[in-house]
Amino acid sequence: MSQITDHLTLIRPDDWHVHFRDGPMLDAVVPHTARQFGRAVVMPNLTPPVTHMAAARAYRDRILAAVPKGVIFDPLMTCYLTDDVNGDDLAAGFAQGVFAAAKLYPANATTNSAFGVRDLRNIHGALECMQAAGMPLLIHGEVTNPEVDIYDREAVYIETVLEPMVRDFPELRIVLEHITTRQGVDFVRDRHGAAPGRIGATITAHHLMINRSDMFRGGIRPHLYCLPIAKREAHRQALRKAAISGAGPFFLGTDSAPHGIAAKQSACGCAGVFSAPLAIQAYAQVFHEEDALHRLEEFASRNGPAFYGLAENTDTITLKRCSPHKLEPIPVGNPGPGQEMILPFLGEQGVSWCLE
Ligand code: DOR
Ligand code: ZN
Image 1 (cartoon, rainbow, N blue to C red):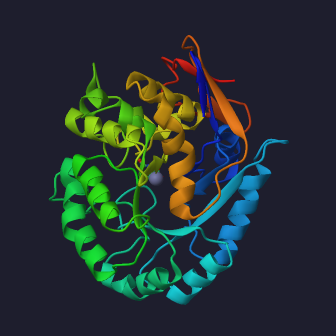
Image 2 (cartoon, helix red, strand yellow):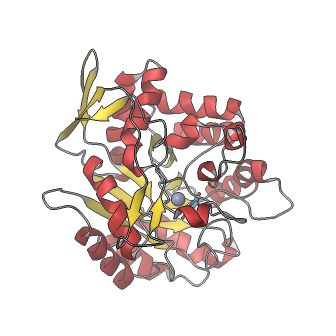
């Protein structure tokens, strides 16, 4: 990595957690990720979800078809775990390089998770197979019990589900996705210390930038609503410390999750922040604010490949300081009346770092 005053060149980063959707939405969003990241771990929560190898291969082809000409981008596919998943098929998909990992959504925890896992005991056999194969388990770590306060769902999940899971499956490789709490940071750091390379966590740009009050600043701001929901400021500070530490288990995952404006600005708005267009720029701004730009390459470009056992990208990107400028909403599909639009995170105010 080299940094000359207001230029920063780093190994091309990867996004270890992204949602692309399908159809016209996929075509609209993939170029934004592919232009900045070398690879991305693609979430499988489509309708219907990606639960087997043939579906993942076909989905990967549709993603590649949406990558702009001349751009090299490698989508890493994931398998959506259901109660009746077959562990041997999973491990075969991993061995054949079709699946980079499997994603555990507790049923009804978030968008398109209705087919997720209802009872962890139903997938014990599959987890045994994954453990034996060294296949990473990516977890949406929130309990779904409606009686648990929404701001406590991650911490309660860690205590009541994750702790027993890491005891029952001592070799299982786990990524706690999009951590939002001090408890998430502590869990990952402590467990990683015991066995490096076993437990990791992704951290989104928006959870580094907003706290729960920001969702209600001057009125309700549906475009900042996501799951897990942003927490108190003290948690955001814990996430920032973890990200800029450069420590191995923490790596970049945007959780960029596009929804059209109508679906967000509704009586029952969807969860998801679409951060892909300004993703690496937003992380650069956070690291700059923390006087830690020298740590960005570890977080964005090195820790992820190390965790997944992959080589780092061989090319670089250069970021430079710029005056923030507005980014217009992204259109989806064919122009015309009622055309769907997506609002990019930070699009209104812009960011003070640009991609060269
Ligand atoms: O905010 C979120 N949006 N969280 C998730 O877990 C899913 C995602 C989506 O798919 O929209
Ligand atoms: Zn996600």
